[in-house]
Length: 328
Image (cartoon, rainbow, N blue to C red; front, side, top):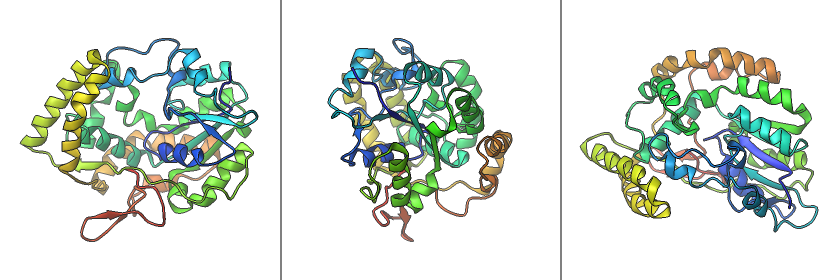
């Protein structure tokens, strides 16, 4: 049975869902019907416990090899096959499993300002009612304790953004010509050119893909008694849902939808918040520049622009710009 020829391996909250959706439109590529199978994250069954909602997420893993290979069985002969699991870059063991299984695979990495990425990650879980702390800086301060308690990688707000360490390890396993790295901002500002870079890297026709499909933007529910009540109910439902399987998702989705309807567009980080989080990334950004040979020093200063792929109107409503994806 076939295995993938290419993988979108990172990073979470950096447009990987939009990249996967865009590449699915190319007639010369085959993308797995399951966007994020997570096959290489474990050697067998995933854990059963973790942070709020983790048990439900673990149930989605396609961890059996026969099921994973079946994701690519419908690919036409000779067509490059791929999947997108943005945690592969972060997980060093996953990198080694990929090297052992498909050593010649091509790897695609999208890098986003690590503080903006952490903020988007936190907003995602806050808006879903799973994150109990209503401030991203305080939530990041809990990260080491949560990791020690076995919470899943999506809770590793700052560790997921240490790309220098991750790429340094990756380049010990794979030659650089098998790795394509570009910025999230390239996807925002130059979607057609960036998609052509990916197509050239994969050896398929360029000029076919010109835009990134729009994705949902995460809302930011206001903190308050209503949010506390709904969130506590969702976290309790997520714990029960781990034992109920798909029924658990059916029970919790309406509550999450209610939180989203009560939300506002995601607020940008303040410079004070960025300053609080910068020490967690400064040394790794220096390492990233050394490893890649590229300049990422702009990540050390204030953000002059919104981190999302949507335009913000003065009245607070949001609209897509020029066919770009609307991502958190």
